[in-house]
Length: 156
Image (cartoon, rainbow, N blue to C red; front, side, top):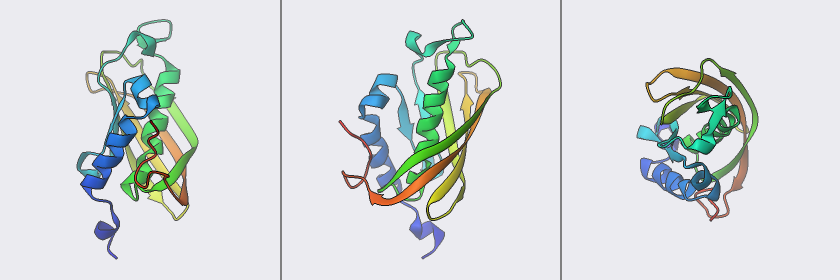
């Protein structure tokens, strides 16, 4: 089987994102997951809210929020290979390069290397002006188990 044949379809990825976006956690954060052209993971905050702010004692986004968004992005990269398999983030390493300001935020994550049970990914966080504000590298454990729903980890 070629690499292209092994990849999920855009329809499968869109379904995964649709269900994941319905989860309580994503709704709580106001975040949205997508897989543009099936090539990367994008997690966005289309509206940065007051509860997201407070980093450095300013209106910048709080580091805890940044960490959670990176965890979503890195943790969803295995879906680019097989959206039906369970996966769990094992490790995140972040560097905060500048305060994340503005009314929107976007994280883009890609797979660096994937084996049969472990995946390595990297992500960048962009502020409303498109500046890279933070970077993350992560390790994700891939399971052979399928999600209970069959195609997404979303739990309503």
